[in-house]
Amino acid sequence: MEVSPTYHQQISVNWEFPVVFTRDLFALENPVLAQTAGRLNEARRHRAIVYVDSRILERDPGLSARIVAYFEANAATLELAGEVQSVPGGEACKNDLRYAESVMRQLLTLRMDRQSYVVAVGGGALLDAIGFAAALVHRGLRLIRVPTTVLAQNDAGVGVKNAINYFGKNALGTFAPPFAVLNDFEFLRTLPDRDWLSGIAEAFKVAIIRDRAFFDDLCEAAPRYPARDFDAMTELVTRCATLHLDHIRSNGDPFEYGTARPLDFGHWSAHKLELLSDFAVSHGEAVATGVLLDSIYAQRQGWLTSDELQRIEVGLRQSGFALWFDTLSLRDDSGQRLIFAGLRDFQEHLGGELCITLPRGIGARFEVNTICMESMEAALLELEQRAIAAATLP
Image (cartoon, rainbow, N blue to C red; front, side, top):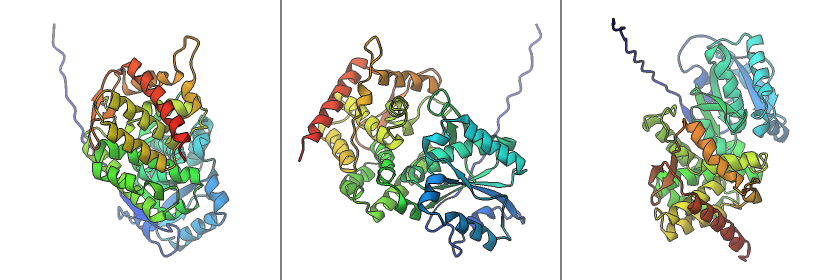
């Protein structure tokens, strides 16, 4: 039999995008957005459409007018392709495919081309949904993310993923690096307390598995976060975002073709907790709980000391997290905890092999392919008992 020839194709693609930390992005004297849009020196006027989380516009009714004025002042570089668009924020914009579809239809109706910009201003869910739509139109428009929450600025907004919820958390999505990420710290000042605190969990997550010094600093600063210490929070955001960027750049698997996903430490239960609560539990609250649950499991397996576990719990509690939700107690007809289905969901999402990242001491990590369900059940019971004990403290 004649052997068929095989041609081995290898393509290398270099992705590059700036992540800028600034203040008052749409102030007329701030050049960051205009410079970002023109950074490729293409000598053209770029069309752009701006989508803003409706909750931000409620808190800052003058924002749309400032955005319009900014584009008018930078007309040599930028042109608004339409009115500033108000989009429902939070998981609402991710839970219904029709939102993303309406954005795609609008982008096509406006005849946005591949050198046009989609500017998304909002929290992580909005950035996900708008990014998902932008990545599909013409196989990818230029997305400029303007994260406005702690969680978006230090985690979701600086990554290379976009997704919507469809038969599960983030079940439809793309890997599509943004054109730029512009973190405007001033947006943090107007956040409700719950959103202000939510992103702290991601900082603890990445510090526990990557950076002991950062973890020590988080524990020391923990009481300052519920007090809305602005300097403490901007320091947290910058260091956490930098760690996330470093991991994505250096881990050799930015598009997650392998099975290990270290930045999802604590997320197998967090994603399921969000879904089981119908998103009454926020992502940050769920991640904080999931991080502590997996840390308790790690301590029971001998991978964390009792002192390290205690520091994790105290740091998260002092940062304002409850760390227990009754949803974790829900069981199916056979008596199995519903939260444990998160392990199966995680396994399917990873490609068929379970791979859970756990800490091995503070600042280090490793992956396991099996979970002892008896020990995880005991960890959940311990999590509940720790919550009860914390509630009795003065």
